[in-house]
Amino acid sequence: MGGGALLQPGSRIEDFMLRLAAVDSPRICYLGTASAHQPERVDQFYDAFRSRSCRPSHLELFGMPESPAAHVAAQDVIYVGGGNTANMLAIWRVHGVDRALREAWGRRGAVVGGMSAGANCWFEACVTDSFGPELRELGDGLGILSGSFCPHYDGEPERQPTYTRLVGNGVLPSGYAADDDAAFHFEGRKLREVVSQREGARGYRVTAEGEEPIDPRLL
Image 1 (cartoon, one colour):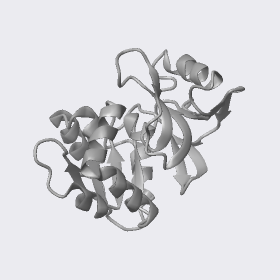
Image 2 (cartoon, rainbow, N blue to C red):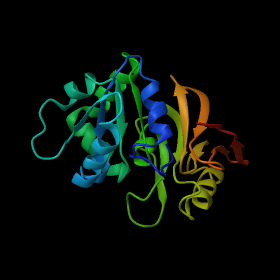
Image 3 (cartoon, rainbow, N blue to C red):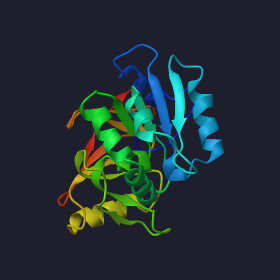
Image 4 (tube, helix red, strand yellow):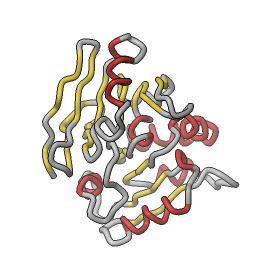
């Protein structure tokens, strides 16, 4: 998910994410590691999902977390929030959450995804503001999906020029970019479609030769 109007009861992208689960009333866990588990974001998650047909929970990795990998392993849907991608990845690795996410996705077929940092993390590399206000490359993703990713493609003015420059210069591998209110749906490692909850929001395939828009399916 590129970003936009998410963590809201009326978000059609989040409804779509829940429908991808293989069970009724799926267990969905919010991982807010990237924003240091800000209470207002956790509350926003529960406000958005308690009225939906699902069983929401959240996982905190600060303080004294108890069996975080086991909690991840029990989920049908894992929703990763936005924030600092680099910090999030480092904390996940300390607690074994990175391995638990791989197993949930690869062995059990859990739905995994998220917004902004929660979209960056699945790729090999991304564009991030993890190191300060100036956008730069990060090549330390989970690598479940090959290539690179850029969120907020139309939502922040420096995203598009920075990403196309980094890919064009070979600093980042080719990849995908998502406007706010657009999302990529992968089955396994194969791109199935781009979906959108706003007219004009779309996805892009970005290579050293330039960007190619991908028309979405409007939800």
